[in-house]
Amino acid sequence: MSAEPRLLEVRRNVLKHNDVIARALRERFREAGVLAVGLVSSPGSGKTAILEKTLTLLHPHYRVAALVGDLATENDAARLARSRAPVKQIITGTVCHLEAAMVQQALDDWDLHDLDFLFLENVGNLVCPSSYDLGEDLRVVLLSVTEGEDKPLKYPTIFNSADLAVISKADLAAAVEFDEPAARGNIQAVRPGMEVLKLSAKTGEGIAEYLDFLQRRRLHSRAPAAV
Amino acid sequence: MHELSIAMSIVEMAQEEVERRGSVQVQAVHLRLGRLSGVVKEALLSSYEMACEATPLKGSQLLIEEIEVEVFCPKCEIAQPIRSIQWFCCPKCGTPTPTVLRGKELEVVALEIKE
Image (cartoon, rainbow over all chains, first blue to last red; front, side, top):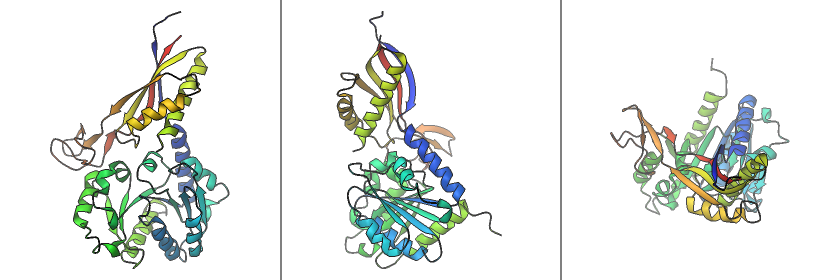
């Protein structure tokens, strides 16, 4: 019996369980031809307002649905139900982010072949969601003009993990003296080359460009080559 | 704060390894933690202590090796560690680059055990 401790090599990814489920989800989305779009931001950046607008405007032309994460309430789902698109609330309890297993469970009784777009609204949080892949094809990070231009520098990890940055609440930009070039510069510093769109769910400014981006991405990654 | 659930996963993994190997005692868990993993070292350390309570790992240490973010510079065509996590560009020529090669690690690499 040796008294000396010895080193045992293990090499195990701590989030493997989540990553395995996320990969399976991504494959399921691809096979069903649905584009899964994740939405992340701090609380109060306007994720739900933009999602409501998105669902309402896409609904007549596409088959759209959403899963929304929230710590405690079902308010978001109730609000989004007005768009008449199928919406399911995931109440995370004390968990501050969505995990792939929660998405998988919520989708259990949904046939994804019936959908063109599936939106996954994460819990308002710029830290924890960055560690958890949900299998989404596209991650959209929101930055509202009222939050300050340096948000990307404060939370580089989540901005770096995103595919599109959306500057929201554009209608308030002048009132809060939002420095747009600075915000864009900070986004590019932590995620060089990322596309940035500015919009307002309230006035509708920039919404058409945003929807256009989503439709292009879906066409690009889902539909067979255009004739 | 998702560090507690991550700490619990680490403890669970170590316990699985211990069970597979019979009666061994874990003295330390070695973890590689990338600066882009989204996990805060200090929070993970205090969560680890909590997660070990009432498990055979109580009293063990979590030894964290932090992994710097490394990007690929398309101009210099080499991998380079970035100077700041707020500036994803080649430290040599300044070319911005989104290609991250290292820095997202969150893995248990080894256990220090006593038989």
